[in-house]
Length: 222
Image 1 (tube, rainbow, N blue to C red):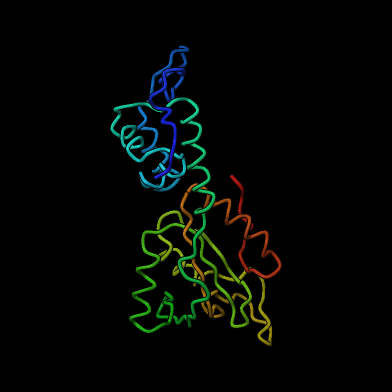
Image 2 (cartoon, rainbow, N blue to C red):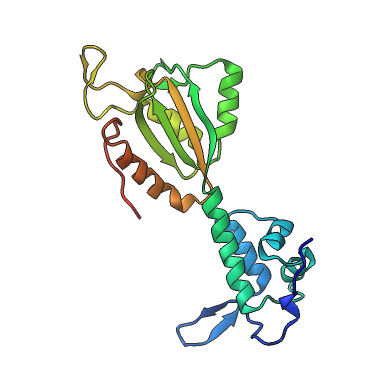
């Protein structure tokens, strides 16, 4: 338990931790519990103990803020926001799996990943209702297609197996209009903790792999 001077007991600074400025010029105070809850929802979950350690305060101090028993000082508010900003920077992109072998196969008008049933169920569970980035690779390990999802990586990546390549393939002869599933042999997926950042990450990767991917567009930065 860190030794610290509990700034929440000091009276030298105003107790309003955050305000929303109205068009009339007035302000409405926001309780600490609301601020921390909003930061958790938008920037990722940090436990009471973790936040206390980051701020070098007693966990009971954070508990008092969450219960609105006491209010952090202005400098503490700045440190709280910075702690969450640093946290999201470290946790923004996390691998779900990398270079998983797949052998897509076509059934009627749809594709599947072409892996044994237990592995297929595990892949579905890993990607269902998660947002982030997926990448398909050729048998040589070259990135051929990548995309994003802000809702369900499983549905999005499975549907994109049917995406048409944006230029002919030569394997070894020229093939026009090949679908991603015909070439993809490995797959990686990454969870992006802040959904709003997903599009910019995708746009960056589309540019980074511009010479190898077969996507039809290069994305747009928000």
